[in-house]
Length: 214
Image (cartoon, rainbow, N blue to C red; front, side, top):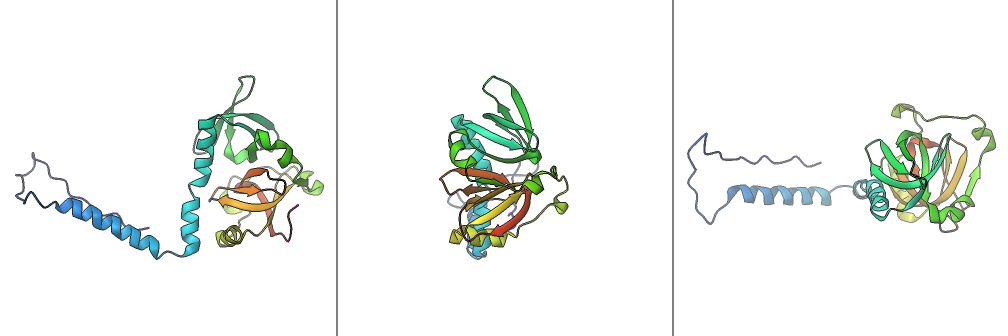
């Protein structure tokens, strides 16, 4: 990340007003230089890192879009299934209002995945289940260092080349599809029958490259 430039601010109560030509504006020039420097730095970043930087805002933008459109959503938690509209996005939680008006405060750590309610039929038919893993009744992992990790460089390659991936979640669900976008916290997967599902990376149990869509 490029270092931020410092801009000096003149205050009349501390010193006398500096003399400068009306046609010149040193502090504006410094801002332009800083902006140009950032652009130059971005151009020299590795393609993989640039892709990741652009992708970081997708998860946040996706939720904000659903809030704005009042999109009915489906949320699969470890021990609960909730349907409703997102009314508020917090850093580590979502506030969801169900059809009957009940308000749910969903900690993101407990959400395995979510998708639009009108895509339920497409999504459900593309989710397999590992019965043995499901029977273990695994719960979310609080400490990030203990979670299953996927190298972002692998995700970038799969995203750019549209390579199908096979994701096994801690709840036993197996989801196969193509990455539409990903961030540090989540990823959107396009499924075989056209449905889209947003998976939270903290819920991953296994990641594999797939030779086919499920």
